[in-house]
Amino acid sequence: MPAAFISLVFSVFVVIQVLLKIQIGNHPASNTLLISIWAITVGMTFGAYNMRLITMIDTQSINITMFPLLKKEISFADVKDMEVIAYGFVGYGIRYDISTGITYYNARGNMGLQLTLDDDSVIVIGTNDPDGLTAWLTSHGFMLSRQA
Image (tube, rainbow, N blue to C red; front, side, top):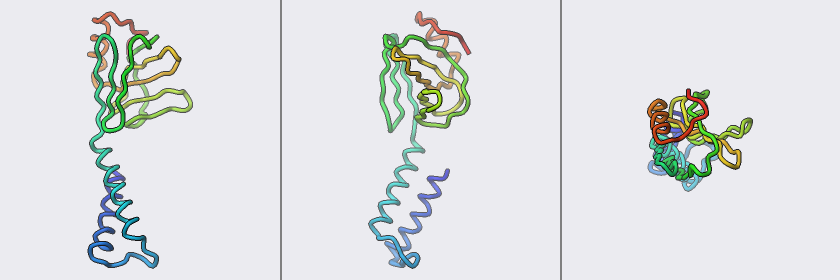
């Protein structure tokens, strides 16, 4: 994990320069800058390590929580089409594909629920259980375009 490595490097720099009072290099960064960069990298590492995608679905809406970044509710009244799909790897987290205009919420894998909203925007929400999701949606009267 690159962020963890960068955090470790800046941790060493902070210890050497701030605590041991040994300047690093010919033009050392100020202690304030060094501590700020260290805090940012540690925060990013912590955020990436603790990122979770939690999806709650009921008969009215889908609630997406991408902890610690986002909470979003999508009403089924605003959805004009949905299907469970397989897609290529897009990475983890929240991704926007500029070429297709699709927003992905993904924590792992390559299966998800693709929603086309009334405004023609498209959202894909990753799932670890595409069969269970399909079964739940169809058992509650939701029509899927096609099934993966």
